[in-house]
Length: 371
Image 1 (cartoon, rainbow, N blue to C red):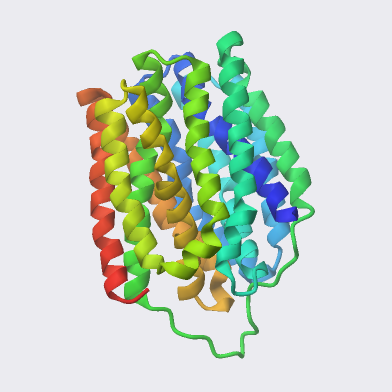
Image 2 (cartoon, one colour):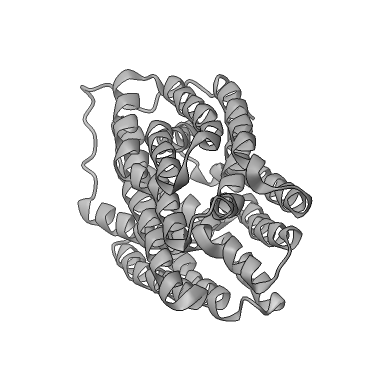
């Protein structure tokens, strides 16, 4: 439950950030390109910062301390946004905060996998608490924004970060590295490259989603409550897939899950971009979040855990976070902003679908390699 509690609070914060922070930036007068830039900064920080924090965690063993420091940086940074002037002031604060807080989640992922004693399918029932926290905030936040201004969002994010800081003290003190004299298997470099490339592409596709879904739906005319419910629907589907992960992992290979998730991602992002005004289609597209995030994420971190030796689990998870979610998410947000300004949401989400299609090629290579 200690890990579950942290996931709950951390993803409650992530929900507010993903679903409503673009609206806050818009309310501050930022245009689509500036919003894309600010939202890309946390992803850009994840290109290099998590690898440093992961190396430091493996080197010192101070995993809980690094997670606590990350949460403290967010608790200070978000309220400071109220003092920022214009897009560049906001970008400066978000950029610094992103570097300082980038180690939290990948280090907790490494702790979670290490605590499961070689049974990665058990990850899902723990991680679903993060999904529950996400749902609680997107539902409550959507209803709140129907009656209250979005200006109070940074303070709410700061409060959630403070709660995460308190919960981090209860994380398990699991050792995820072996003694240096023990011989470790050599990682499969080809598999690592394909896994990172597939992760990059899926994160790029979701970078468009996280930056522009709320603005897209608001532009179509959906209410804040409806937008919150649509975000929640995707996470409900994610929870269901997490619950059934032990059985799914027994029946399908990791590469098969990655490939299927990317293929369904192509369909999902095309549906959102081209048919978002049809509520029934949009509902189906949001249900596919079970595959495009839930199954893909769980299979990815399990693949990292399998490929990297015990002495480098922190580094492996942070490297994946850096080069896949970091670089990919940043590229997706920036590409989505470019597409939005030139062709509106249709072009932006078509680019997301293209990224998922390219990622499917790399997942196919993993399948051919027997992962």
